[in-house]
Length: 266
Image 1 (spheres, helix red, strand yellow):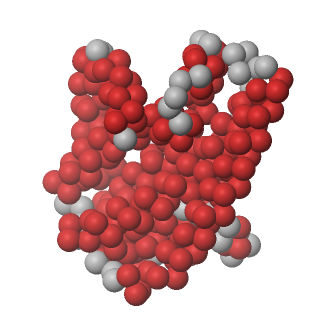
Image 2: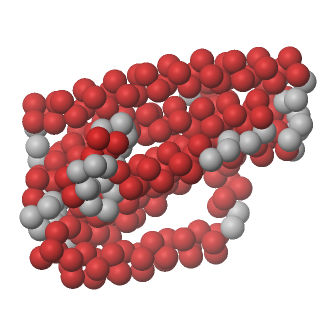
């Protein structure tokens, strides 16, 4: 853990050296939540019946969807972006030659991105609550557990993308396709019940579907674990399978890159 925190701290020191940019980031978040509030208020009469089973308030529904999407975008994109940077600068071989284990290196590479996303999410969540988003704060711990499962599932997809970078020096369309389908079918902007019937079977293959629904039911209306158990169980299954496949793929890609001697070539 000490090594992971050291890597994250080094990344944060670089980010914090641009203080004005950080101020603008916080300011843009606070200003950005206002249009979301106004739009959601205008759509509330239309969306009330659709989101009744997931809190009933479209503003809070939308905020939870957008925050979760921010986390899965980081999970799917942070590792391969960091890996590509290290390869292009010749730093990956140097990192791998240290006594630090590969899981620790990977965690350190994406740690700053995740903590930055968490910081932005906290600001947006508090600002939304101040504007009237109805949140069940007592359910926050359970909600964080569900969010963690979602993040791990999409981190597995990020590891697969990193495997492609190691082996072929490009991710191809994989991350963009996964995130695009997740936004379209996973219920970020609207509940999955509002998706046309011919698309709903595809939504059942999107991990986000089984993350956002229980997350909203818990955080927005205080649902119990018994109520959300089925969705959480399916999400856990997705997480275990995806992580297993991704680790096998990454190990194979790393061995391939070492054999070809391309770890320092991009």
